[in-house]
Image (cartoon, rainbow over all chains, first blue to last red):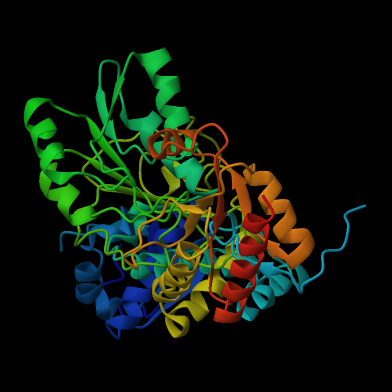
Length: 92
Length: 384
């Protein structure tokens, strides 16, 4: 199931390798005027650094552009699906 | 019990460490000890994220100061020495040839000498004038005649304050990786790492940046693979028994010195307002050098052209530690006698093995401090 176009307004999330990248990305989101928040990693996902960035799904295109920045390391984007999350390709 | 130290001394030992520290440093360290400073990047609770944010902001501000756009290439260390060891031991392989200035500190020479023994590397000294300034024409001939794996340059000598021409050296060794020891110049002289095409640079927080001891930084250009000095927990990719290969995590195993980083953050908060410290250091050093030049029996081992960041002197017939002891006892002037952990530099200057007396002014020193020091040295020199 895909939440895109289903009226599911829950936030999408970006999972990073390290908290350094989370904070760097948060800064870029703010610089670009893209809303985001730092929240604990959802239970069905896993990352040591403990935090993910959540964003609004209508900003997906802007987020994809932001995540092309090589300073932000490797990341995975997830959309909420049912009680969990499903990975979304970054290539768009 | 640790004894109390009076604060009314004339402190001319800023090449060893800076004092006093700016208020922001004390405030941030007090904040870090007075409230929960949780481990950074290990958990999702607020205190842990706050610590990570402090580390991130410290790195970002330092990267900005040093002209580094790719902040992840600036790794935090325990100090300048660790950064220099990281590059030297993580980069060089058996058979490599290294060029170094004759003014290098033991933080460069000792790891190099270890690799001479253990990896069979060779180290060649760059040609220089009697004060240790690299002779770029002679260096050019050397660069054309041999292939080097690394060039190491101490940006400013901690012995006599000589500042090397980094741009000139970069041109001479255009294709060779360049390691800059910026122990004496970070926060003091303009440094734009990426613009100046510096491949590696190490510095500490506690000297020209006016931060606490126990924190340093090392820039590693993205093009090079440098083996880390140690592996361990990083708060990232914990499912793997292999150490992360991405930056900065790959070089920051174990819990960071968060209280020291807090102080460094404080130092960087005030850095923009203070500006670089080089002009002040040079003015006071020039006053010292000019004044010493008028005292009979004193030999100055620093350049007299206003470029020196500190001053080395000797008084034939007196040992450096004897001079320093009298300056402290009779004039309250604190300075560093001896070899200043740089025997190679003293061999070049002809002041080995006794060394020199080094006077290194800093951000809170005044012309009045210099006058007292000169009066003291005049008195000591007259006594022989």
